[in-house]
Image 1 (cartoon, one colour):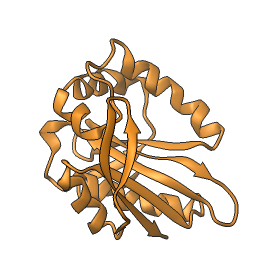
Image 2: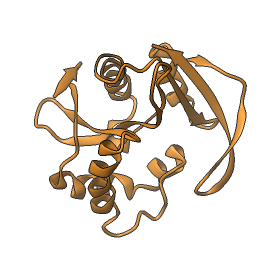
Image 3: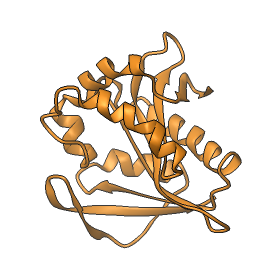
Length: 171
C-alpha cells in the first residue's frame, strides 16, 4: 500500500462496497464525474469491485481505492484504463472522491501515488485525462500533477454530450 499526505491507494476489497455505494449515491459526485450513473444502481459498487480482477488480469485497467491512512476509510477511487502496451505504453487517468472529502488535497496526493505506480511498476510513458468543463477543481488537480491542457474536445458520457477539458502528461 503506497501512501502520501494522509492518503493511501490500494486494491479494492469486497468490504469497500458499502462505502463506495454510499459515496456514489450522491448526485453531485455522479454529476461532476461524468461517467457514473445516477441514481447509482443497487449493488452497483459490489459488481464494479468484482470486475476489477478481470480488468487487472487482462491489462486493461489499474483500479485503486483512495483511503485515509488514519482509520483506513475508503474515500474514492483512482484508475488508469484504456491501457496500451509496449514501448509507448499509455493510459487514461481518472479519479473521484466522495463529497465529504472534496477540496482537501486527496485527489492530488492519490494522483502522485498513481503516477509513481504507472511509471515504476507499469513502465508507462504517457497519460491522458479529462474533466467536465464545469468541474474546474479537477483541472487544478491535473495541473498540480504536471498535466498540460490540450484543445477542448467533445466527448460522450453516460448522460449525453458534454464539453470536457483534456490533458496529457509525459512520464
